[in-house]
Amino acid sequence: MKKYISIAIGGTAIKYGIICENAEIMMKETMKTEAEEGGSAILEKVFVLVAQLQGRIQEKASGICISTAGMVNTEQGAIFYSAPLIPNYTGMQFKKLLEDKFIIPCEVENDVNCAALGEKWLGAGKGKKDFLCVTIGTGIGGGIIMNGDILRGDTCVA
Image (cartoon, rainbow, N blue to C red):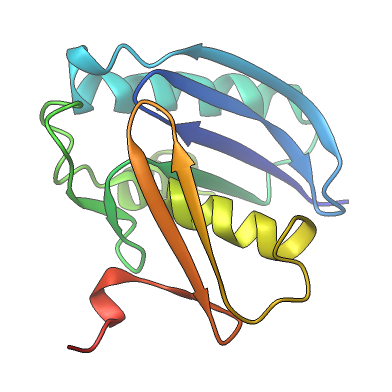
């Protein structure tokens, strides 16, 4: 069964674990983000977490999944804008750096878009074509599902 390293980076906490392809959560833990230390410190924490989590999986992980605060270019797997909450986070190249270091596919998505997709898959949005997901945490965000797909800011037409 495929296993994925999953990391959710928020302004206050980094939640991480191993998830099986059938959505079974093998393990999950939390640590402080310490956002004030900036983007490079968070990247180093992610490197350590991926190495530790890979060590808990007997076979090589099938992928790394990053859910993060900030505006994400999903094709590049990079942060193209971040509020001042996390200094020097804009420009972080998670996908490239993680794939180069661990030789494992990596996907990166905005955390609220991930929440909306989760609600569509297993939650309150299941079976619905259109809905809005609002999250309130360290920051406030919104994810929109329209016609069954996530609506990303760079795909909006004025």
